[in-house]
Length: 392
Image (cartoon, rainbow, N blue to C red):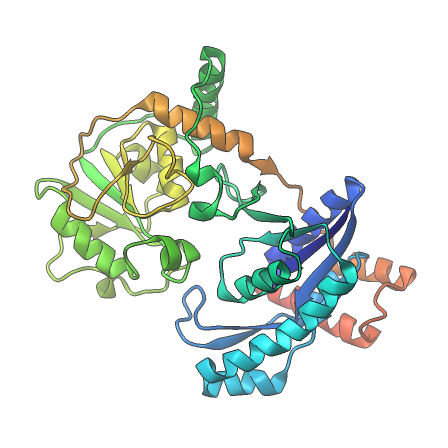
């Protein structure tokens, strides 16, 4: 089978993951072509809330070009990058045309039987998906995203999309057998033990895990565009006698005083270990964070105001914006376990190789697989990526 793996923005971690996926597909006997981009223009990402360009050239040279896999890289355009920062909305149309011309040639010549995409929700990926479907209305896709238990080293695959766009989100988990239920319960105990605590208790507070505002889970599947708006809503809709503890996403750089409403009763706690905050809470309230799924492992009532992979199940209590949140709510641990069982069936392990850049570089030189880039450029890029990896 001819498989095209499209990854527009490989960073250090994502490049390793995509290469692991590619090697897994190769082991299945498939022919692989990697399609990557040297530069992507974004309106926002993580804690950067302004239009900017992400230059991936060094990663492409150091990791993709030395992988021994067939690949095509869309060259960066310095002129378009400069124009984008000055006038992003106008320049985006030119960027789309530039990318579409390259993509069209690749898809027409390679004729992939399956296209694999990590996530697939950002606008720059949607352009590619729409083009591929225009060329072949019956094009088969496989969308990948990080798994849940844990996210690192695992992934899931879905033909429709990821998160609230996945087939999982419209699937009601089946009733599981007594043996399957016992296996899930043993797994929950083992999972909790990894974090050093099986002592589940109720310390009388509601726990809120916050998310990144630029995450597609927020931009596409949340009724709130900012965490401040979400906390303001929570403060007014959680019963006044209930203490509230919130925790920022680890990558969120927002100063705490910019998040909380004036004279707020909400306490921000970014120091206590996440799983301890879950295990000692009365219940958990969030938008659609993976932390909500982890909270099911601690047998807690879990409320969500957004949509996610859990939307088709009864495991998480979908909360309307006019409802009041109480800490004691009728919920089904059995229903939670059925969702956990479904997700564990969907989740796959992924072995990611992080061998030395220089070992791979030597192998690439021996095999002469770096010909699309000058050798000096690959060496220089490998050194820069190595330095950045050491400093991160």
